[in-house]
Length: 84
Length: 277
Image (tube, rainbow over all chains, first blue to last red; front, side, top):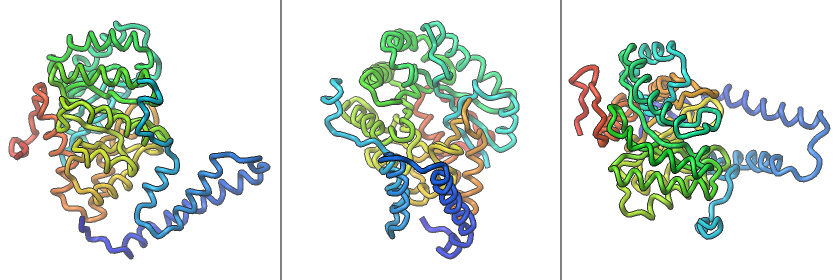
């Protein structure tokens, strides 16, 4: 769908907002570290780092990929597995 | 711009919210039956709730010029109690001919369990037997993708289901395409933290177009904003989305979907605004 916004318009509009959100993530990770860090393999930390990696990709479906990362897997055989 | 909020739980909101909605351009709402924040203990608890939805809320809304419609069911969270669920499903037909009842909803899954799936199918059967439209709740957060796929499997496996009469709600970036591709209507819920922000919902309107897409606030007793739909309208305008597309999503699409229900006796504020189908 065409709109009147160019890529540069979008960046102008969202630059400070995006900067602020990156800063918030950095501060939260710092806070976790200052509190002693997470011992062992915490799945949530792995997910967060994987999520950050997704942001660095050049695809245009990063939001969908992040959603999938934080989702339980779907099996086509769920009925048999659940006994439904 | 006149708009319709197709999913909002006004039993959980104060009267001032009705006044605010009216001032923001809301002309109609539809209120699905949902979880009250606690598990109800008997079928009579649900009977009283359905009276509230079909008698009390329409009167409260009308004081502010808002037309109120509703959907009935036992929600997915309480569906874990199969015995109670079956009692409620057996009682629902008492209310299906009441003014403003649009169908069965919001049924769906919560934690994607066997019991939830069992009761979902029994609600589907109720809707089929009584020729009712269906409004579907998809699960939260990490359960959404799996649960949405399970729901679509159950719907698509039954050839009696008319996909034109099913709205799959709370879609997000990872579920919207599957819902639309299979021929269902899709709803986007605008929440402050979970589900969609107005910005992300507008992204999806730009990516998928306005066909079969609805947006709602799902305002309830949790963190939510009843005026989220006007926030989306504002964001659309900021991006230069045509007024006709905005109007289609926030007004014409709900009217078109709801018009399939025999109890949708909607009166446009301006008769010139009657939907051209």
